[in-house]
Amino acid sequence: MPLTTDQEITVTITAVAPYGSEADANGTPAFIDLAKHPSWRNPDVPAPRVGDRLHTVVLDASRTPPRLSALQEDIEISRALRSGG
Image (cartoon, rainbow, N blue to C red; front, side, top):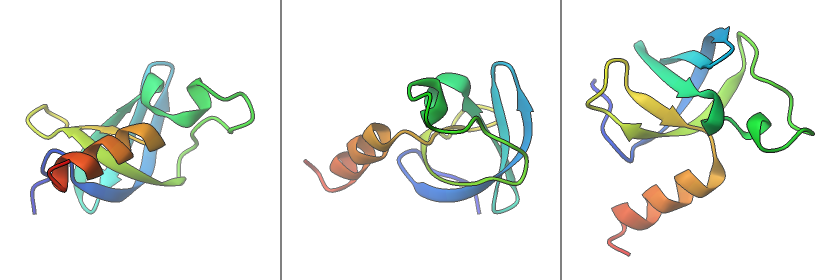
């Protein structure tokens, strides 16, 4: 099933690079930019590692691969958009 923008999904990190992480979103390849992982803003949060599971939100499903965020504020914004608020 294709991902949709503002959809929440739990993903598994499949590769890590200096600029972000590749992830598996239930069989769909996806990407989390470094700035969209909590470790970029909080030194107490460990950097992403292969095998990590993260709760994310789809920021842009039209990109190849779709772009995700694991930041709580992005998840909350998407929840508000989905609820019409």
